[in-house]
Image (cartoon, rainbow, N blue to C red):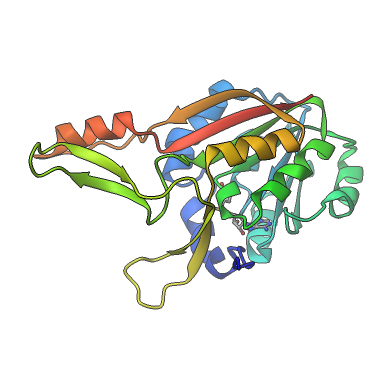
Length: 260
Ligand SMILES: C[S@@+](CC[C@H](N)C(=O)[O-])C[C@H]1O[C@@H](n2cnc3c(N)ncnc32)[C@H](O)[C@@H]1O
């Protein structure tokens, strides 16, 4: 039985502060620089952001793009509204795994959007108990030929609690271990790992074959896939091995798909 409360309402204050106006470290140093050069969104176009959090993508996209962000966490939507007065940007509290047509109606009419040019789900598909239902919302909202962009924790290498780094004592080689991959997993994650009573968020792991079949069922055809590595650098004794591992094992996967 899956835990259905995937909302980040209980960590909203912490997450809003962590992300701020320009994103947390990996938004601003890895993900957004990639999107800037590989995802073409131009002034006058429209973007639907699914599980938008406190709306950091709207700030990245800039003021000339029509944008609707949807998230289930009311406090994050309120934080988004507070920090973004752009009349072309709207925020809605709703569950992105339920049919969104009615929930989007007013905001779309205000922005004169019939169908969106683009849909995005940034670091959030793996926070949904039913990710396939979110993908099913994309097709009906996109223009034909419209693009969907998904940024994920790399599903092959970053499986919370089921993957990690270790060193082979015989060869001294740093290696990545993966314990589970094919099964759908629901994994609790402490927001503040050092704290005994830390609030928990839920992560959902799925294999690439599941994601690709959900995309196919949602009428989306994959047009591009990228694997992004961390920009961080180790110093000291183990730096060479750690930096090499970091450069070899990607942190994120970016998938672009088109509505036929
Ligand atoms: C890691 S945060 C990412 C937020 C944002 N995309 C970003 O890049 O900062 C995951 C988000 O998924 C949202 N979420 C989880 N389940 C949801 C659901 N069923 N419907 C809408 N949003 C959901 C959470 O509330 C949280 O804001």
